[in-house]
Amino acid sequence: MNHKQIHIKKFGGTSVGSIEKIEQVADRIAKDKLLGQNPLVVVSAMSGETNRLISLATQIAPSCRGQAYDMLLASGEQVSVALLALALEKRNIKATPLLAHQVGIKTDSLFSRARIQEINTKQIKTCLKMNHIPLVAGFQGVTNGNTITTLGRGGSDTTAVALAVAFKQSECEIFTDVPKIYTADPRLIKKATQIPKLSFEEMMEMSSLGSQVLHCRSVEIAAKYKIKIHVRSTFEQTEGTWILPKEEFMENPLVSAVTHDRNTVIIKMYPVPSGTEFIANLFTMLAEKHISVDIISQSYHKEGQRLAFSITAEDLEAAKKIIYEIIEQKKVHIIEGLAKLSIVGVGMANHPGVAARFFKVLNKIGVDMHLVTTSEIKISAIIDKKYLSEAAQAIHEEFILIY
Ligand code: ASP
Ligand code: MG
Image (cartoon, rainbow, N blue to C red; front, side, top):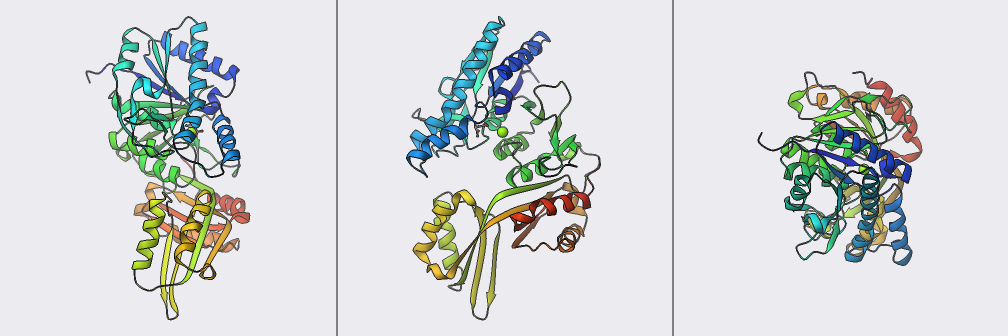
């Protein structure tokens, strides 16, 4: 490769969560630089900051979105990128803090879920040539008209991977507060163990199923451009978890991880007009409001058509508005207090019987499912939230996660 190697390093919110931690990140960058690396750094907002900004906005208007909202949220990264620049300056290391408009991170204009369309490499290249470390504010972009946008919660990962694409790099480091990705959330499952490597496909499923390790879009881009992601600890020198193409695996684990999502709501409708017109219209209206529907179940009965689907709890109010416009309230049942429990593993594709084992475990502990869905490499079931912990432990136990 004739491109100079650049070391793209993204530090998450917990890594820059206090002045003390920002100083530690600056030490780590300084050390890497001394070792001859050529860092290009991306930072998130200090942990808790984006939530704080959201709560300020929602005190004024509960479901506000748009230009002002994104401008507000993007300010978190401006603070951390500037503080890190000061910390490096103090160490006599030249670094340039850059916001999205300075770099030229162009996105579409879908506020709060903007997608990066293009990154201008000129400004960063100039920094690198002057031997300055470019420090890029993650999570933000600008439209063609220079209006600030944000990439969706957790979006700094995507900034980092997109920079790796723009600079034709083959790797990207994502620094966080844990040494590796776990087989399940250790706060829910004490016996969760560390995973040395995962395939892009598995990580993508995990991200979309509620694991908050990486922004789903970042893994999509990494998979498309074959950029290896190294998720590792900011505060330890240890090797973390590698997210790699499937081809790099000698053997595929049956189940790599158990994930969960506590924000699920099911909307059931019965009876709905027969045929597909009603369903097509309903889902078009939901899509127009950017409400994504997760699991869908539809069936015919003598008495009429039944429809059930799940969405995330945050979208419930917006979804209700649409639904009650087109169907009588008494035909709609909303079930809250649910969680989605899933298992993910590339090995599942070639092994029958995984679903049977999954259901047997739930049956043994007496947990019912509201909706279930499978793909080649995952099984997800929506259950009552009060059983989540017990069910997750039992599922984790069943599919012994040994590497
Ligand atoms: N600060 C943003 C968030 O909390 C983006 C990120 O952390 O990646 O969602
Ligand atoms: Mg994150």
